[in-house]
Length: 177
Image 1 (cartoon, rainbow, N blue to C red):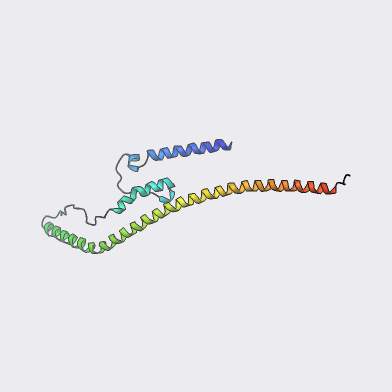
Image 2: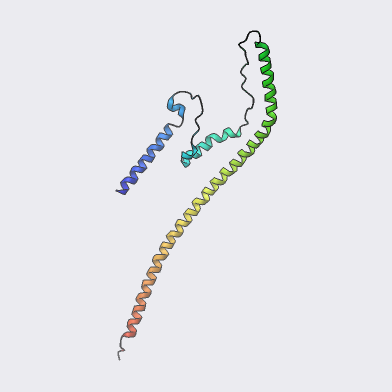
């Protein structure tokens, strides 16, 4: 009974993994472009999915962000005041962008340091995972050895009892001449 349940669970897991591989992207699922991002809830991801998620998003963190606004032409629908408004908007936009670059340089430096730290922590987590697996293997090996030693100890104890009983029986027997 339990074996059938285990097999059914394994089959369902494999089927779920197959479906996940088939539907990797929301755009593929809905067959059109999304109008806003839908971040994944990383708490619900499996370990394999989490590694894939990190592998997909990490390269985008390594690139330098473009802090300049899009190069869309600034226009105005006003006929008389349109040109001065466009000129003022362009001047303000250029001034603000140049001013923001002063602050963003520090932010970019912080972001790069954060990414380097994140990469180091990720590497450390992977190494810890490997070490944990080795420790678990050693523990299971020790448990097996302990079980074998326990069985041998019980065997020695029973032999000792047999020898003890024989010697006690020899002492209680009368001597034959």
